[in-house]
Structure formats: structure tokens, C-alpha cells
Image (tube, rainbow over all chains, first blue to last red; front, side):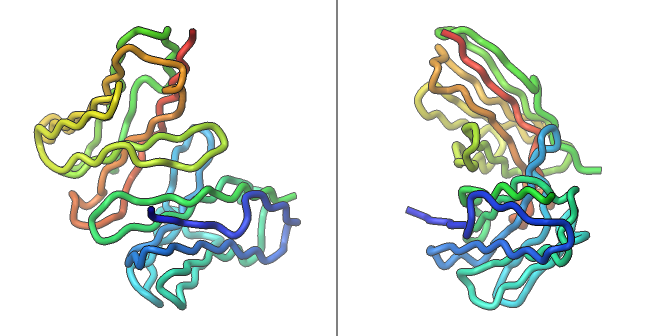
Length: 111
Length: 113
């Protein structure tokens, strides 16, 4: 079975803190994604990566950056967390042109 | 602007009844995905529809794709409480050539005993 894990299920951070969310997949997938999910807005793509060290902005990249140093790991970084970044963050991975496999999600609260 | 619209957004139905969730999209994609999300949980892949006329069934759920009409349906037969969840459809925003999906806002299904 494909397994996508995320470093935390719940996280509480203060405004201005630097926040790291990590995602690891064990299936040698090329593509990895970060989404945020908010009520009434569905899932919105923040960034995706199609290979090690390769990244592309999604629909809402502002305030976020990413890092992919190894194929299995894709990190989302909030350089200076703000309250409007309180959300559920979902990581996903996929082999080429196939359905995406999602991690369990990290519910981030910024106070 | 690329759009994926689901309706209804909320569906309350009784056990044993049938219903259909609709997913309309504005891009010319021949690849459509359906996902299920239980409360507080992540998304689980249900169906991948890869071509016009594709139909897939799993238990009480059946999904179909009409690429000419840019429409997919998720039909629920004889609903049971265990099907209560939020259902999302998603399409590849570049017509199936990438994995950059755009998701609908979801349909919250509540099956009442």
C-alpha cells in the first residue's frame, strides 16, 4: 500500500513563527503536492514538485515556500506564520499521470 | 477561469434511497477523479475515469464520465449510513497531461437512518 505520512496531525504556532510541515512518501513517486483545505473553498494547490529540487507554484503560493532535497520528502515552509494561514494542510504524491495519494493532513492553528 | 462545480453541495438522504451527485468542469479534460473524505480525515481515492464514456462501480457507488458534456456523475444506490462523507471530484487542469488537479468544493452527504 502507498503510504504518505505527515509530520504532525495538529500544530499550534504563534504569529511570526517559522513553521515547517513535512511530508514523506514511500513509493518512489515523482510528483508531490501541498494543498490547503478550507471550508467552502475545497482544496487549493500551494506548490508542487515533479522531481528532486524541482518545484512549481500552485494557485496560492504567497507566504509559503517548499523544499525537496530527496525524492521521498517534500517540506512546506511558512516563513512567518500569520493567522490567515490557519488551515488543514494536505500533502499528496503520485506516480506520473495517476490518482493522488493523500497524507492524513496537518491541522495548523496560528494564534 | 477553470472551474469544477459540484452539486448539490449538501445532500441529506434516507437509507435505502438513490441519488446522484453531479460534477461539471470547464476544461477539456479526459481524466477525472473522485475522492471521499470522512470527517477529520484525509482524502481517499474512489475512482479514476480515464476516457469518455468510462463507467466504474464499487459497491453502492457508480461513477461515469461524459467528456463532451464535461460532466461526471457519482450515483449512489440504496444508500447506507457508512456512505456519509464529503465527496470531491477533480480534473487535471491541463486536460490530462499533468497531475495538477483542480478540485470541486465537495458534496457533503449525510445518510439518515
